[in-house]
Length: 254
Ligand code: UDP
Image (cartoon, rainbow, N blue to C red; front, top):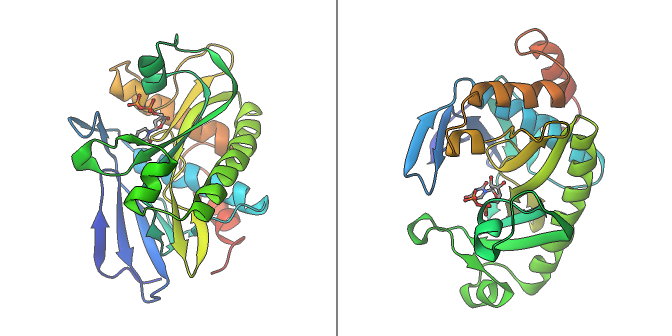
């Protein structure tokens, strides 16, 4: 698949067109940002870890009936995805209180929530991604009521599947962010599922294994990403790339 014009460069990823107008290449960078890009840095090899973590998780979800933009992993930093018209809503699903929920509602961090809590944020950096409700979604014309219902339902399905998958690998899914988009009139899960956009805690020690290590200067940032990668793929970096790539790549054809 040939990489053509760059059409978008974000904080952690770049999107390129390909020779197929329906498909894009999503390239994962090592750059990390936090607090609406006020804090910036590099997490060595993050792009490689995130590309593979996402590829494995999207493949897992697809096999269980969740439609995503993922087509296949191309190499260590690139995946082939379906072109989406992205819906400008960040969908956050929470199982345990942390981060902005703890701050906003005065809940101690680490309190298990009786049921998953779903929140919408308006994806707009200039506004600092404010929290919005269904009425705001309608007001701004971000998605139809039917799409909002589908997004809620799917986000909860993804939460259940990921929680189980990660629990088996010794990780607690505290909270995470999803993005959806439209492709040929279909609603698909897009973006990435990685420690950049998920809070993952070690089941035994409750140690943070995600971007909070970078946000809060906790140290051992690369090690945390590498460990999540190891648990999710069951392998060390470089040793088995060919094998993983073939396994992930062979399951989905555009
Ligand atoms: N999140 C994200 N991108 C954002 C904001 C949040 O991926 O722009 C993820 C974050 O990694 C966490 C979840 O969404 O897993 C909930 O984040 P929260 O609202 O607590 O905000 P934070 O404390 O990260 O500012």
